[in-house]
Length: 277
Image (cartoon, rainbow, N blue to C red; front, side, top):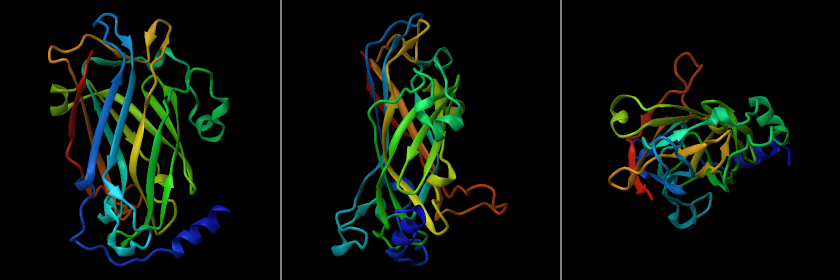
């Protein structure tokens, strides 16, 4: 089915009303898990580990698009929202060496990922899903539940490209790795800031792309003697700190200049600790 026909079909299923202030807010059902697979090295010689990150919302779609019997729950009961920025914070014992690996050009990752250089693809088996909703959708009402295909590539020495394919769009989420700043730097070493592209925020006018589950990560690998994701010496607590918060636009609202998305809510950081061994 052509994209235009699919959009018309799913839009026809929607029920819309003005957004109600009594709706739950995007952060209410936001959750986060993380894990590290592998053993610690030393501060001078970190070992390669697999990093798993899993931001998700509690939600259920048992009642289907029309919420038959009022069975849909969680994030479907929230105001239709889209994640604009997703921030992942990682422990001080975690290091990154993307510059030691081959990289892929952004346009190649988007248009022809099989042409990316060997070694530049670094994802692990991943699962992701989302809800297509309409602006002002009734509580519990969604238009389409979608599954996302994810491929992750090294874009540069400090950036990742997550190629996402859905029934409505193909787009790239860019994750930029930088030092943790502000209050976060007392607990974390780095922040990976993922910027969600327009096609995964508003696939077309009137539709809202609501990501609800994103379980992905970076594989354990070594190049030129350096680990892609390195784990140094475990802290005395034997625990590693991870954190997450999302920044959301409500009903795909633009700023007055119409050039950027208005952030309607910045969620509180969710802190998690995982075992270091």
